Amino acid sequence: MNIRPHVALVAGAAGLVGSALCRYLLDRGVAVVAVDNFLTGSEVNLQALFNHPGFELLHHDICQPLPDLSCHPLKYIFHLASPASPDDFGPLALEIMAVNTQGTYNLLRMAQKTGARLLFASTSEVYGNPQVHPQPESYWGHVNPLGARSCYDESKRFGESLITHYARLQGVDYVLARIFNTYGPRMRLDDGRVIPNFIRALLRGEALVLHGGGQQTRSFCYVDDLVRGLYLMMLSPEASGEVLNIGNPQEFTVEVLATTLCEVAGVPVNLRVVPSPRPDDPERRCPDISRMQALTGWQPQIDLRTGLEKTLAFFADTAA
Image (cartoon, rainbow, N blue to C red):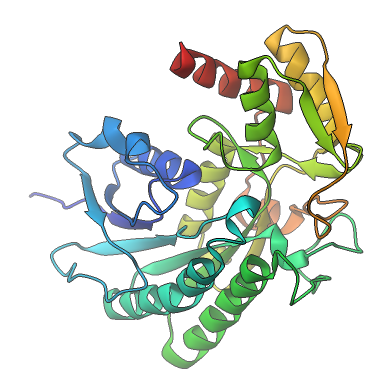
């Protein structure tokens, strides 16, 4: 008897998280239909998978009607498709809002048609500049709806609402993943976020620039930990209809991050403080992951130093 494997559609497959998730799924016997319009993702991130018999790549914008995938027994739909770099919030504001609204609607319709569970990659940005620390899922957030980041913050909040109401009316199975800061190999070094910025500076022999003094805090989750958690969310019956924070709850100042990265690279600490160009940047960001732990048993395993070592080694090899 020939048993067909489960199939996952991964929208936004060519980014940091999407490409890592594709590899993770294939390693576990899940066939992958990878979808990306390559607006910010890179085909290079997926090249190693092209000859895998369980991998198929579609160059497609999910804001447009989706192709017929009835030949695939879809069981999982991962919606990771959206530019997410603060540097993209200006020039790609309309594309960001479209993919988190119309793109989400299109994937909801596919989930309804196929019976697949939909996982929506939401974000810690729904909490804005939070006044509660760490942030639980019950916190409504502190968001400027007209600010420089609002195209991302508000479209993700809308996406969560759209899925919740669509599921209530149509019976779609879903889980909402509020993803906190994630890093690892295959990040875009021109991404504009703090770890890519620091690594790019190190590779160029430049000072690491601390915007606004470096006392802002973030929690940094290594990408392998993250995709393992997303998979557990997708598999967990208890996660159905839930919104769950996912990230590393260890909180570090940006200055400590910069110092640690210099130590990992084996170079003298060379920091330069400049005024922040982004007044809407949150001062603190840290997830409460107790619900995620309770429902799936997940918690991060890779500490910051180890993750930075892996990430820096990847980019050093790439640059060589």
